[in-house]
Image 1 (cartoon, rainbow, N blue to C red):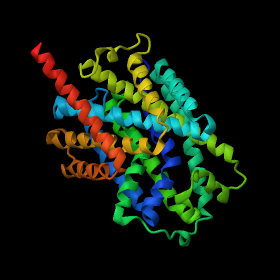
Image 2: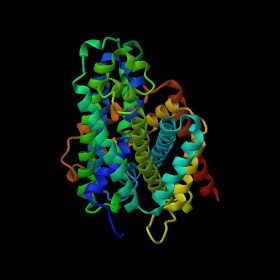
Image 3: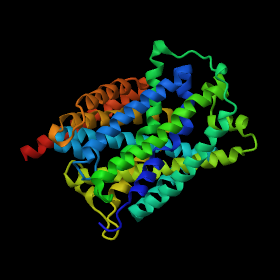
Image 4: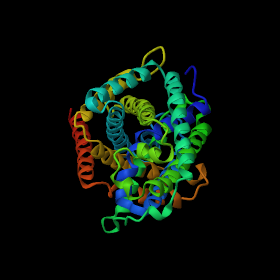
Amino acid sequence: MKNKLRLDQAVFIGLAAMLGAGVFVVFAPAAALAGYLLPVSVLLAGFVAYLNAASISQLAAQVSRPGGAYSYAQKYLSQNWAFLAGSSFLIGKVASSAAIALAVAGYLFPEQTIPVALLSVAVMAFINILGVNRTAFGSLILGGITVLFLIFVVISAIAFADFTTVSNEPDLQGFGVLTAAALIFFAFAGYARVATLGDELTDSKQNTARAIAISFGIVFSIYLALSFLMPAVLGNQLRFSIAPMIDLLAITAPWFPAAAVSTVAGIASLGSLLALLAGMSRTASVMGEDKELPSMFAIRSKKVQTPWVAEITVSLLVMVLILSGDLVWAIGLSSFAILTYYTIANLAAYRQPKNLNSRSKFWPLLGLLLCLAIAFSVPITSLIVGVGLLVIVFGLRLGLSRIRKLS
């Protein structure tokens, strides 16, 4: 393929995928659940994300095919596990994309939320169809702006932090810390986007792991700092805040216009949306090649090799979910499905032959168990819908498989 992505471009794709709507929307509900233990939830979500990233890197070093855990499960588990991974990824990312699109509209045009969310998806899908290099350029701009803004937020908050103001108790009886970690994991999950690039990245077996490590390290440092500083500046006001970034800067940098915060939040969300749509279309394309989805999903444009049929299809599915207008429910569904996806990725890493990687089997096993624990701690409605969707799609697959055998 011509014009493959460089390491620095892959890093910014990862940054744009992670530093999106999550950082602007999850800290308030997470603080209401975890209280003064909010940093513990961030550490837990970050540790699980790190274990997942390590397993993804371990697998990517041996499997360069696009598709992420779908391709890894295909090689080291079975086609059934691969289908479950791919389905979980697509369900989770459709939910993520809908939540992010709603966040874009909520920040920029709150009175026209659904129409603007639909338009955001259409525009980002069009950019992706133009080709992966333009996706990388868009991620460079969007991810770079967001990183600079969040570094400014952290620095401006340090002088105003007062840790004695953080007194609200965590909801320990309701497993609040775990549920908060599930919500925060939504903000980390974008590093899977780098793994789906596969052979679109130069020297993919080495640079995939490097790009994941660099982008994840930057994002984790920012999130952990905010988990300490937001409660220390806002106190218990954080748990009731609708727009915590605006409330935070109103204290630490009152000269900074609220409209600028909304604009940056919208830009960051668009960066995540851009990367998510690209990752979903490539996974759907690989599943189309394997006949796990209709073969039309494997159709690529001759000029830039983008899977335009898959891109359009997943964008339409996102638009359907946007019509529900429920941001928090979409986040919970996304976290459950993506944690299921990483459970399978960790299982694939655990099953990888020892001669292919020197990493201890303990780490992917631990990642698998923690993914399951957090996945089943999401809000109950999201859990029921997530389990139901996976059962339905897997049941449909088994039914179609039997019909093909009979015919």
